[in-house]
Image (tube, rainbow, N blue to C red):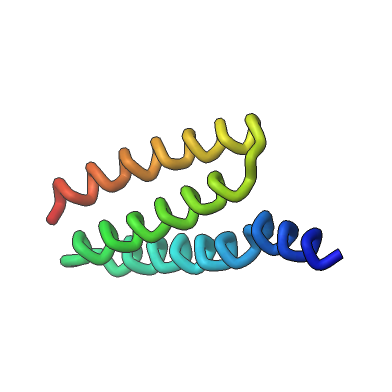
Length: 86
């Protein structure tokens, strides 16, 4: 039973999803502010990337893996755009 609990904890991505939601909210705030937010946007996108990557590592499912790759690809596009405005 203890091993099952430990395994369930390792597969639980609720904390990562909570942090991802907070990062996405922060991105929205930064974009609404405008001005000189390039570095902050870049760092926040980097944090989103980390959370998505952790979710992908924890959940070993082909469909989820495809979604993770798609999400990371979109994040990378945004990071490139943000780096151009710095």
